[in-house]
Image (cartoon, rainbow over the protein chains, first blue to last red):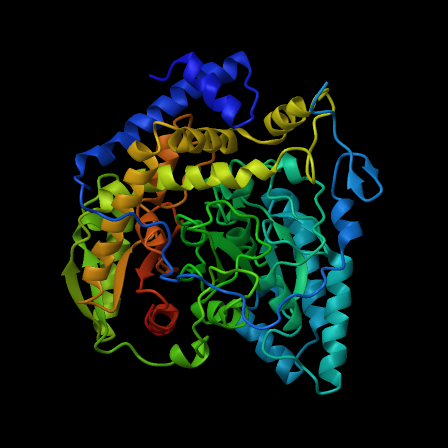
Length: 96
Length: 482
């Protein structure tokens, strides 16, 4: 069973804030899922390669002159829920 | 004229023959949507103004003899993770409730350039995480065959839209079964293409090594028409395959005499496989043998490990893909945030739903220092074993036949509080997804409660022609010999 501290550490890494109820709920949910996933340890994979992608493609390069102007910078910046100053998104201070 | 009752091929032919106009078909669907959407909750947003304009433009082109092709003037919907400039793209989440994409997804651009009319964006599980469309921020999509049951997921809105005649065809996305399972639950045809056959550019990502956008329609022929337009290499998506797109509509015309069809013993022996599904599988075997196909028993020994592999790999990739939702460049921002850290944490906590947060947390854990080898790397190794199983089987057979899912559509709320219960729904679709292979689900029978039951075919990489062929031929056979 995951400890409360472990759940809080994961939440911090994931930048998610949990309520007290959520901490207990995720402790239970995550522990259940991780136990279930443990079935993979039945298999000997000592000499097995990892599969990280299934296309078989290697080093896909840009061919020819495929760069063109995007042209929708205003619409892109308009997507922010924050204030916009000079086409830049204004955020809270990082440092005091 | 109840034009909304026609399937995509009938609409295409009718437009070509001048039996009706695109505007007439579009209005028929609009009326249908206005009548049914409140009850079934299929569309998150509609764009009827744009739809009427596109339809009129199509009719004008056709009048000048400049029709763009078979899809010109055909009304479709899109799963609400496909970016469109015409309508918001919400991913069925509070996080993107008002998000208006500045650009189109490649696959939508291709459909638009072929003259397709966009009716609107349809419901999905939030950020496509789920197998029932119950996690959507905008509510559940009810199954058109029985509105106390789910439509499946995550492309539940897409499947229901086709099943309820609220569009001629649609696009879904399949990461672990999310096109095939809802197609089975709603009694329609859905194709998961080979990973990389259709561009993911402009589609909101869930698990980047697995996501496969694909067509859903009443029939395999309809899926072939849509796939013909959306498939192909895209310089904006470096995971797309360079291979030429074949002529799917020719490929489906061949009969399947001599086709070798593998029946995996692990799939049919599964605990929890419903009697009704078993019976429909048996009837599918009889139909295929009557058509001259050869059934071959095969084995996929690592089948039982596939869901566990998926539920390590997918959440890990999800945790990376979801990190962009931070209240900064787009999406929901918490009004309570007083510092930058709070902007991140509170926007994410308030804007994202439970299942999304659950998967982010599992993925973060599986990728974190000290656990990466035990979970993620281990899962990737077992993924290799699963892929090898399929490679070995495809030395002996052309396609594999299996049920799409262990049961027909379940009741809303039935899967309760245990996430693992829901995860096991995808046991037949996950293995092929992990191997990057294409799969199709088509309706074959019904259960005792009269709900549809579909069967699945799986093919090797780039096997869309044989999948569409066997599904289409089987559909012709079932019409002729009900």
